[in-house]
Image (tube, rainbow, N blue to C red; front, side):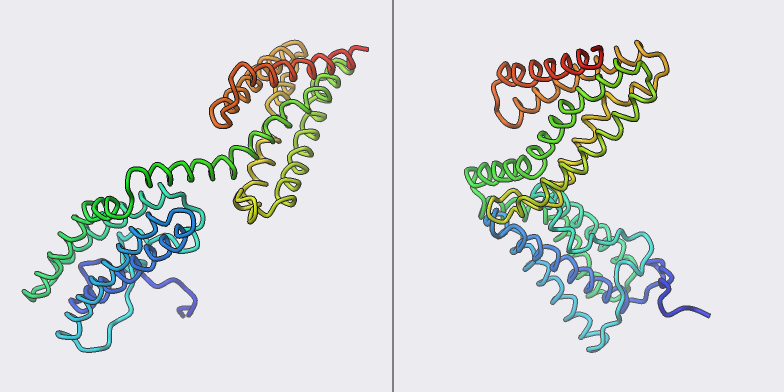
Length: 327
């Protein structure tokens, strides 16, 4: 007995009737139009010029859909069979619309390029499966249209997005990336790397036991990650500050905090005390320089100032932990 909720068997493209080929083309164009419209709506506030490009591309897909529906009405009547990409083998289903909120501007551009290439390949194959001359001509014309969409997209980009607008949009995208991911992640990495130095090295020199030191480092790192993640996510919803989703910021901050502490806690899984300690000290040195590099690269902090703040501060915390543990 087949469950009503089970997934339908996927059919081969060459098993479809000519009516089903047209129906599949219609539903595919409808899906692509919806995705481009969703991209446009997502970008309208921060990237209005690129939003116009995707809105125009949605209109092009609607025009293709109307042409296909007209052919179906002419040949098969008003009732269009329900057949979609996911019903046919070899088709990569489109990403759900809610994912558009997770994509960057460059991701959307890349997704649009992949969509057009997939549509082009489909029309080339579909053209070989029909015998009606008018339908073959329409499918061939659409294949050429999809192949030319890259040029259409470039033309629309030139129409709506000047070089100055593109530079401004790229700067906005970079600023959003920094506010949502880099800044919270850097804060977490700094906290995890620096604040856990004292307890980990104090435990190491106080006990001389690598396993106990590892447990202290693990608990300090995980605890700090959870605390920092929740703090970042809860203190700003991002609506007024423009810093983006609190969940994304909280995850970036919490994960990087935990990783910052675990970097110099994991070496204490090595049973030999001095080998573990020297390895942990080398990792600390790498972590601190990495923080200085990120500050210089993304936050535009002068490099030597970043080194002075991070490396010197971290070295003082490290020294404090060693002195306390050795006392």
